[in-house]
Image (cartoon, rainbow, N blue to C red; front, top):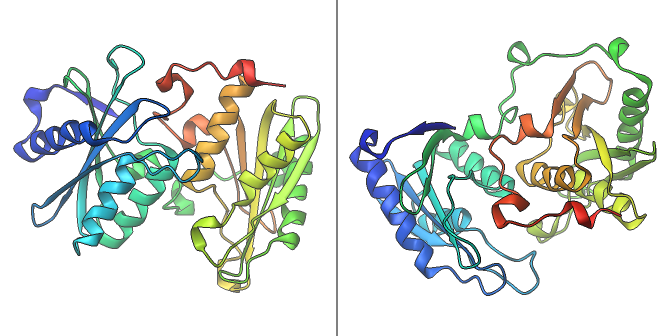
Length: 309
């Protein structure tokens, strides 16, 4: 994200940030005390602002960014060109650095970017506008819009034995995917410092939002076995639509957020290995590369390393 001074903002950016800051006052955050406001701008100049709404069962919590997008959509507006985000906390002094949206929100913003045909501008600002950062959703969620000419592919011959084994485990896991709706099989396998491998696949649900991705299933499987010291994850996919089979799988924004959390727990910039089912197209990145300017435990002033088993 590029840092700029408030003096260099245009009128639309100024107004959008002000709307996001004002929206923090409406946040329902009885558990974290962390207020997030977001405001989206459409091509017609309309602005829709909203805030985060927490839930005692943490999973149903809805972030400010997704609430603002939902508000726009409910008004019949999907031609979003920009979104501004701001935050403050009841539990610690002012936030000094503007943070980016979480991975799940990036995924939703990216979807809207495809709908609007625009690489949506993402503006992060502190409450006092002392730190403002500007980026685009494609910069904040790299590899979602892949072209192999712009990606550094690795030959399978250059993989080490752990990487080979991890990819094989991910490929094998695609056979166990429960995907009656999309027909898109995803397998993931995580590697721990001790050398243990835990593989799993995606499990879909008729209520689409309840679907669990393979990456989260594999992390959950490791955690259920008492392992959180994850150092690498491999992902592969195949589809009942054969045209998709040659595309290298990469984690969605929500899975990147889950991987990033585990990276903070394990104290390791987790290696993410992405491969097609034939190992013809392999890409290796770190989670910090796949989720730049991430929102994580540090933004809540929480040390999760002590949560390692």
